[in-house]
Length: 192
Image 1: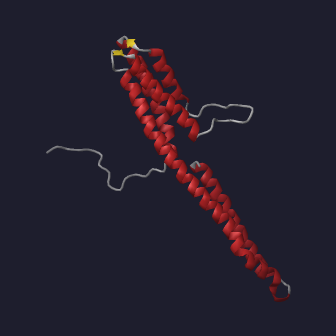
Image 2 (image 1 turned 135 degrees about the vertical axis):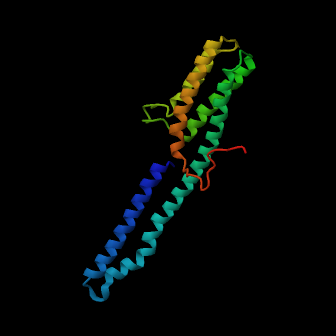
């Protein structure tokens, strides 16, 4: 469950609780029946009224936790795959096995992304758009390079393209993580 969706659910549950409080106060003030039967009935139902949204909120937090675990695993694999692709562009000559290994790693990440996120605008009749297209661009660039001896200028151009695509993914992908500034950061190191 994404942070945005969890936030929306929390807002809805909070609104339900506020509505219950307002309903309770209104019934308490305006219940003119003998022995305040309406208010008493409402008060008796409060545990049930509060339990359902609270249970659903607990379920949502569990889904968020699961989503974050999947996201961290995906992030780790994505870093490895992209670094392998960048490293591939540093070699003057690559074997078919190296080529296959890099493509396999990138393909796995592409499919893992499909497992974590659904396509943008996806419906039963429309496949939608892949959410992080730059990773597919990196895959296409490695395919275009191929294996064997590769000119230095071609490798440098591919490396720049891969790094640029990675930076665009990285920037947007990290927004989903709940990250905080460190309490005691070390921003530089000075030798004496």
